[in-house]
Image 1: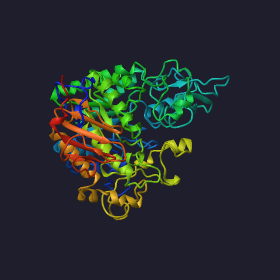
Image 2: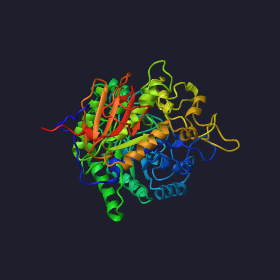
Image 3: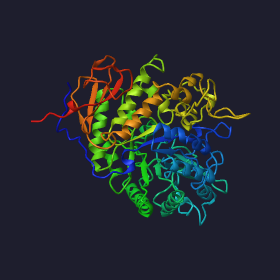
Image 4: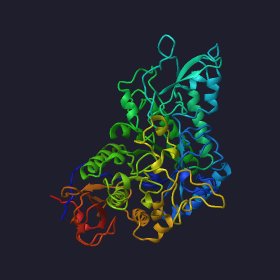
Length: 565
């Protein structure tokens, strides 16, 4: 029998409950969720139509990817107007209907907000380009001061102001042509040239986003997912990076001169105060959850102090190999450093930027429905048993693998356009969802003359269609639904304590609360179960007394009480 490890410092109690601390939120990538108009692109009306499905699944909220007016160079993360809806996705009236329907169903609505950069089509940037280098123009002009414009290096200014590299490939600087036709200044873009970085040292920028927050809060949203939340401020002198090649190779920024500057925390304190102001009016808490890409859990923890962001995505499980020691180390760090601030850890296994777990955990030559799927199911049940909040990316609950064979001509990811390489492209996890039927468009888009989905769906998507998943009690969907129901119904889950158990190599097990045991077998061979009896829930077939390979199971057991004396 396994015994609890007492005194490991990882028991976390809480005294107050807030809805976001242990919520499970579903990430909706709007253009790939459900198309209501037949143009091959998902939209807000499609999200609204899918709300009953999400209610049945059991999530407590949704996070919507950007739907603002945008030229779509990075699928909405290049925002041209922060207070409108792009016609391809609907309009403000449709958005209001979506929020109203979600509230009636008890589903929170979070918006994706992009404060680090805007679109090159944003009126501010157009104004900056139009201002010449005369008495009202140049680096000190009011319009250019909202961005990072700088003179180039060298005698003729033909070299970029510094050696920074963009994370989507190439230099982080582009040179403009001035209104008189002469070669001009350079502007900073840490992603693509179509996404100029905003200068948060300019008070106009902060004031503008105050307006944006209040615009959407006044329309009833429950909070915001903040893109590039560790960015915003750059070193004021814009010096050279110590390792520019590492900056470009990284998916998440490692340039300490362009990331994680101390001034950013004042922004989050102010945004938290705005949310608290609204909560004081009507008693509804508004959530701020940040995309925080920093080197360590300790740095991560600084963003979720009691007066800053409520949550920040803990991405380390996204990069952890399928290995018991790696998962244990990652969980330990998060519980020690992040939960130690009084916040809760925000767990995530999939999102719109990462290879899906079914593929990520697979083995070369293995079928999509084999070892990768078993491990993905096991990881999901592990995540749902951990203390804190969890985010599910659309299609995760269907067991969708990554689509790896999209032809070059359909790829839309700017990483591919900038680098010519498929190594880090994200289109494969963004293919539109299959809802029904045996052939594309699988119910994603309907109607006479409907356009093809914006990314092609493979034939094998039929096996993962929602209608089949709901009809098959052995499906990923039922595993997620059952896990979410137990998570809501069992007091041991959500927030609370975690105590590790002694286990053989390749196995992790822990106790939640007063006796819920979660055990994960990372190996391929069966091992003795940590407690007797039939599991409450298991990620695969699990007979009494045995925990098969690549399987997670939950039990309720008094025998998991820590030893005393």
